[in-house]
Image (cartoon, rainbow, N blue to C red):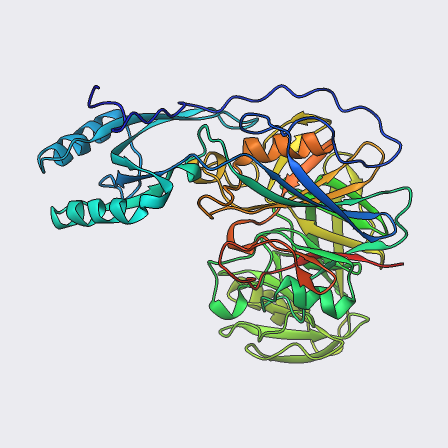
Length: 489
């Protein structure tokens, strides 16, 4: 065998291709599909169904079998496990110099709706079965002692051809018989992360899943902040990232779309200023709005103007304090602080004008008490076709598009029913999760004509009643930024 194929006879496909699925027929109600499982060898899945409440069925779906094993991947000088052909060949030579027999693997990340395909190369050593991980770890240790940077990889995580297995939970909520409602929850505050089960318990939810991505790049005390639009009970609690996917919830209707938000402070003297953010850390010269749901102190090093429910300035203070109950705070630093000093005097009125626009319809979304919004991670399906908008939604990397991870997925059917699904992953031999293409195929198979990816990985969780029904990748439920809750009537 050539040294440029994986040792041990491992055969790995170079790319994923989109599986052609049958057209989705109009349905009188949401029903679990009778077609074969859309991934792997397309076998007949095993499934069990439990009726949660009127109009809500929970399905446990299992398919595939474990045939993937382990290999040792050599890291490139960049620290990544892949690189260009020339970089990979240089790395290959380094491994050969240690006396080992490496292999060069070509990997093609598939194209998506807004990003072209990408070809990269990996350098790997050896192949071991699922039960022989310790042997792979010993080989990795030997390579490390030779001065190489390496890691042990389970091949099911790669995102290339696999036989599975897959383990998913699917909640199907029938628009014709369900009489409850859908809401968003940020838990006790925007800044604080909280478990889905805790948020579900507080609202006595029938079903709950984790929501969108939260900001892991801010201060640890503020990492519950959603990345993208968040509306709870008609109150904008986090601004949108323009054009990114979101799900708009109103009563028992759910709509997947893209949103844009704007917030403007208008002083009674007629001067206007753009409010750059809502309930997040402020950058230089930014004006940021904080609501009582924030749950943290405003940033230091600027000025705060406290507004009552009618927009009257009831306090002017140095920043760095909590938001009083029933009040809002406009915070500014630098030029924004100067604007507040000139146009937000004690007893002035500051009108805070908030606007949300649905970018598909170009219409304004009214901020009524029954409105809730959760930011999606990536668009997957639109009008019944796979349409993965990874670049627009900020996730056009090899890791996010090709690699398999646990997924939390949301879809809507032609008749307005809602599908919530979790695909567990990162559990070798038990369940492999899905990449974006597979997640899109899975949601189409379930009957979704529109679908998005929510946060995933260790955040993936589904709660039914008081119980977490999936198996989170971290081994236990993770605290997250927000959740989508299905409430009884």
